[in-house]
Image 1: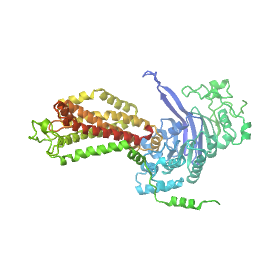
Image 2 (image 1 turned 180 degrees about the horizontal axis):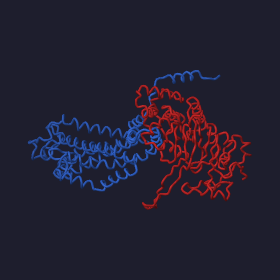
Image 3 (image 1 turned 30 degrees about the vertical axis):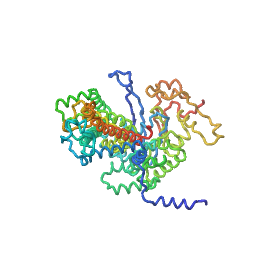
Image 4 (image 1 turned 90 degrees about the horizontal axis):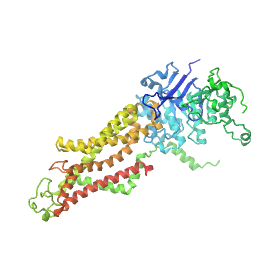
Length: 330
Length: 308
C-alpha cells in the first residue's frame, strides 16, 4: 500500500492570550484552539471535519498549511514534516496544497481581474511560464470549473456568489495541487448554489484524483462528500470514523446529538424524530472543563467523566468517550 | 420542448464571443466622479489655475523683476489694473507687474503643495503599509517614532530650519516634506491593518506569495483610494502652511515670491487704496484651495460610495 498523502500526528495550536489587566511579566493565558488532532488521509480520499463554531476547524486547516504556528507533526507523502520546514522550503509544498475559502467574494481581490486572480498561484509557483502559456492555462481551468473563459477580464464584483466560489476553486486548481483544503466552501451560498458547487467538487475529485479536506458545519454536505469524518469539539477530536459508519451508528453522545438535530425534509418523520437536546453553552476555550471536555453538556456524564479525560484512540472508529457506543436514554 | 431558440442562440453566441471587458472599480469611480458637479467645478478651477501658472508668463507684458518707473511713486493713482499699460493686475508697491508676480507666486505655491503631498504619498504609504502589514514589534517601533515626530510642534521646527539654514525654496521643500508624511503614514497603517484581515490577503499567503509582493499587489492597490483622497486634501494644507510661513516673512526670498508673500504685501498696503494688491493674489489663493477641496471631496465620494 502506498503512503498516506498527509498524516497529522497530535497537532496542537495554542494561542497566548494577553489580558488587558496583565502586567508585562505575567505569563500569558493559553488557549488551546486545536488539541491533539491526528488523522491520516490516503490519496484520493476525502476527510470531512465538522463541529460547531469556534471548535477549531478552520484553525486546524490553517495550521496544516503553516498559516498559524502549530506543534506536533504533519507528515507529507514524501516523509517530510511540514511543520519543521522553513518558509522557503515550505513554498514547494504550497503548490501541492491549495485552499478554498468560506466567503467567495471576500477571498478575491476586488482590484484584480479574474484572470489575474486565477493566475496568481502560477506566477508564484511557475515563474518560468510565459504570459501566453499562463493565460491559456487560466482559460482552460476556467472552463473546467464552469466559467466562461471570455469573462477573464472581468472583476469579482461582476459575478454572483456561486461564480465567485468557482473562481476560488479555479485559483486553487490552476497549479494542479494534490490536496485541496475546503474551509466551509458552501456555507455562504444558498442551497441551490451549494448543490452546484458540491457537484463541481465531486466531479473534480473524480476526474483529477484530488484528495480533499472538507470543513463544514452542515452534516448532510459532509455525509455526501466524505469518506471519513472527524467531529471536533473545543479543539479535540470527539469521534472519527468512516462516513458510512459514523452516520449509521454514531458512538459519541456529541455526534449523536448533532445528528439528531439534522432536519429531515419530511414533516411526518421530522415530528416523530427524537432530538437529543444539548444543555448550556459551549464552555470557554480558555477554561475547558477538566476530564472529558464534553461532560458539562453530555446527557450521559458520570462521575468518571469529571476526572479522567476521554482519549480512546482505538481502532478505525475512534471515539473519545467512556461510554462509547451505548445508546442515549435521555 | 419549450426551449426559446432565440435565447439558446444568444447563449451559444455568448460562449464563443470575444473577451468581455470588465468594469473595474476604478472605472466605476471615474464615472461617479465625473457626474459630481461640485467636483467637476473644482476640477475646472484647478485646470484654470494650473493653466494660469504655466502659461501666464507668455501673456504677461512685464517680467516679475522689472520695475515700471512710470508708475513708481504714484502706485495708488497710476498702478491700478489697466490693459493699456500692460499691468493687467496692476503693480505692486515698487512698481513691479503684479500679474507676472501672481503667476510666479501661484507656481511656487502649487509646487510646494504638490511636492509636499507627493513626498507624503511615497514615504507615508511605504512606511505605513510596512508597519501595518508586518505588525508586532516593528509596527510598534515605527509608529512610536511617528508619534514622537508628531509631538514636536512642526511650525517651530520649520521656522528653526529656515532661520538656521537660510531662507531658501529648497529648505522650504525639505521642511514641508519632513512633516507631511507623518499623518499619511498613520492613515495608511490603519487602513493596512483592516486590509490585512481580509480573506484575499489570507488566500495570497496560503498560495505562498512573498510579503513584499502581497503589499505591492494586494495592499497598495486597495489603499490608493484613501491615499489619493488624503493627498488631494493635503495639497491645500501644504499651500496654507507655506503661505503662513511666507506671511511671517520666512518663506521664499525676493525676487521670488509665493501667494502667501504677495498676500502679506497686499495686506500691508491695504490702507493706501491699493486694494488690487491684496485682491488678485487672494483670488488665486482661494480658487486653488477651493479647487483642491472640491476635487478631494469628489474623489472621496467617488472612491468610497458607502462612506457618504
